[in-house]
Image (cartoon, rainbow, N blue to C red; front, side, top):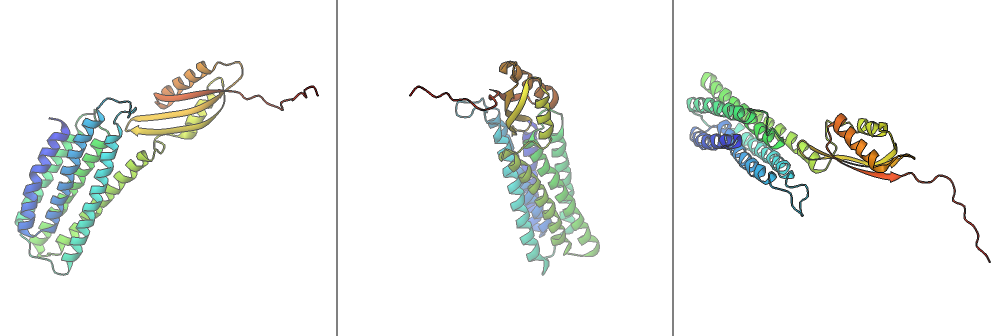
Length: 288
């Protein structure tokens, strides 16, 4: 079973336990954490499906393959986190005026166990170096933010047990919701940048242009575009104007080689163009 599969099994199993104890004990913090675990379970399941889709070979209809499936899954995960946070905010406000009585002992035990489950899932997802793409990191973000939710539920249970402060439950729930909302916003921001074909964050376009201009035989350039198909798959296209006494094919090959060596761009399309004649064109008047 894959790392995502193990994390999915752990999260889905404990989600049922946490939801049951949360409703029985009356703890919104625990129910909120269970709701977040539900979002995690859906996110992990979506991540596994996306990985399978992304591994498919390219077709005539999808010449880049299905690599964007992982980015779309991560985007959906961010939306799910945001919706979960909104539900927590609404429920916490409704409970603030008349907080229900809560079984602190059951909440503390369940939250502590949930924290352990989330840490195990996070360790599984972060193990090794291979497969650490945007989709796996999105799933890891879910699990880590859920671990913070378990910490919050545990703190709220301790405040109730030690001081009898039942408003700790909606207060901590609001804090958990804020963390969840921030994580969701970051995922939506980063993945929407890829979907809108923005330049890779680590790529300096000014430096890329300077590298191209430094290649012998390049007189000028235009229509420079750099974007990401998916995590680790950056693409460049550019039109280069060839200086006189240079061969377009050789210059294009040299630009490709420099992009790979200097900027790590291995998927480049370089269109060579001949230098346009300068000056006015003389027209001869024909016989009358």
